[in-house]
Amino acid sequence: MNKRADFGSDLEQAAFWMPFTANRQFKKAPRLLARAEGMYYWTPEGREVLDGTAGLWCVNAGHCRPKIVEAVKRQVATMDFAPTFQMGHPIAFEFAERLARIAPEGFSRVFFTNSGSESVDTALKIALAYHRARGEGQRFRLIGRERGYHGVNFGGMAVGGLQANRKTFGPGVAGVDHIRHTHDLGRNAFSRGQPEKGLEFAEELERLCALHDPSTIAAVIVEPLAGSAGVLVPPKGYLERLREICTRHGILLIFDEVITGFGRLGHPFASQRFGVVPDLFTTAKGLTNGTVPMGAVFLKDSLYQAFMQGPESSSSGIELFHGYTYSGHPVACAAGIGTLETYEDESLLTRAQSLEKHWEDAAHSLKGTRHVIDIRNCGLVAAIELEPRPGAPGRRAYEAFVKAFETGVLIRVTADIIALSPPLIIEKPQIDRLYQTLREVLPQVA
Ligand SMILES: Cc1ncc(COP(=O)(O)O)c(C=O)c1O
Image (tube, rainbow, N blue to C red):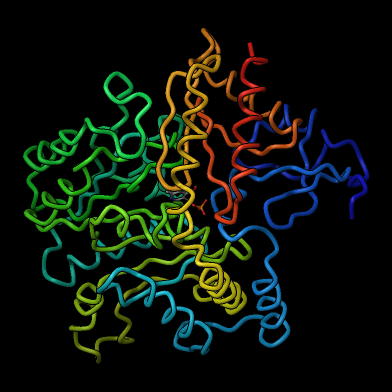
């Protein structure tokens, strides 16, 4: 298991076109992982790597947890696949039921997908269809936010606010607009927890309502804490204000909880941490601890009921013309149930609360380290923002990422921002090691 992987040929000629990867650079100098357990990965040569990113924000309970492994083994040997179109299997019903139990009050319905991207596109489609079902089909606009990341499918890409997406693929979907992001280094640098300044950024939504006529807007989608575009913690009062504006104009508020869901911020979901309730929210990643791909959209019972009002006799009686071959896949559901049991056994969905102060102090101890221009944190998430190297944005953080990996710590970078989001089982000495590694690595980067 620990021996070097044999690719049979030069890796530079490998068939695998790697996602979100500089393929030519990577294939010249690969970083490979071959095994994982608990807080660690091991390279094919057997070198230990501390996981500072829970894989890709998904392995919240740590790697290869026995209950999840056993549940998957059992299910794959019992029933590998069964359809959920006009058919059902008990484990999908059971998993949805258990999820509804940990969701905020009133979120009693769950629609299964296979990824965060699919959850986002599903939520957007549910929002559009909901308004139509209620005779408000004129609500076709979708509002996202600059620097938002909502996955790679057309809907999520369009409401997302990443420049690179627009540059590469165009605007994607018509009828989409964006409010501005909340990043404000000038006023909020080195904030601990929610920044004090920036509530007024929510007023941007009122501006778009005035511009477009609010009765044409179906939904607003935001990450309660923006992750992939650099960890942007919502300013105090900001989410509350978005909620008020949406409620006033009959606009659905969607929280994209693909990374904030399942304990990342010390509560099962970010809406519980911030005390702001959306109308729908999307999840994936921690839903199955990353073991089997799966996503889920949670919605309020009132939304579900709006779809259940039409005549059952019309054509097939299908209330929402949407679904994936693998919606509610039995093996994914088994992984999900094993995951929920592991979260429950070890109180992982709230564990971040007890670690947050230590985590915050450790992160902010990097203030004054070479290149660092901001540190921000919330729950078990932190970002260390670096001053970009003149003429080479993103290079500095990328070099820190490579050096940290060589030193035995996995971090994640986006542009010149280092993002940290370890498994929720992390212990204090491992937190200290994570930040000590950065303290040593950053001064070595030019
Ligand atoms: C907030 C958010 N939404 C959606 C996605 C897309 O999820 P996936 O990569 O599973 O499609 C991500 C992925 O990082 C995310 O962070």
